[in-house]
Image (tube, rainbow, N blue to C red; front, side, top):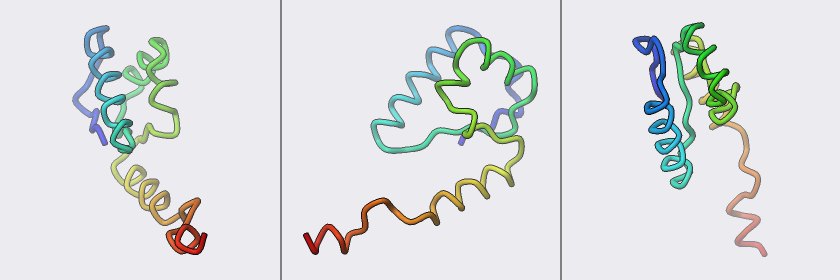
Length: 88
């Protein structure tokens, strides 16, 4: 979770680094998300195509909404349970 409160803008270098970081996290099955994204930054992310890469569902206006979303996600049942794998 990247707290973006102090991020006013993003340039091409930062965008490239962010994309590389997201790929690294994804390769380790870690979900990337951003919280406290201001409107100007959101607009820049959208124009640059980064918003689509991040996923609009991974942008949160507050810490509380981010935590709640991740708690709900972690409580959803896994697609395949260990018991069903062992029973095969």
